[in-house]
Image (spheres, rainbow, N blue to C red):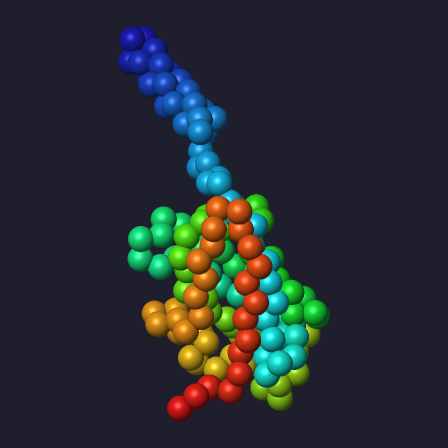
Length: 152
């Protein structure tokens, strides 16, 4: 009988601890600065470009991403799903997956399922050595980028 009581008590303690851990703080969303902008390729607004802000050394952040619309405009979204990014210094890279013939991906398709290829030149995708940077202040800002033919 005593053993049964301890088992039930132990189970209750585990359940209560799990409940309290789940209800506790969880991860807090840091103070985010709004960031928007435009991406152009060879001087024209570029749609369906993923814009990736990766924190530089000394910036405490997880970064953020955004995707351009038909007008080339994007808004960064934090990993929490909230708009914005932590203030700091970032390397900025880009990605745009297209069909092998250069056409946009059909809606609802996975790039790997349709053999999509990367349309952005390597020098604009290199997160280890980004050629585009952004210094995001606490109030946020607008950051416009141009992508051209890679230089050799």
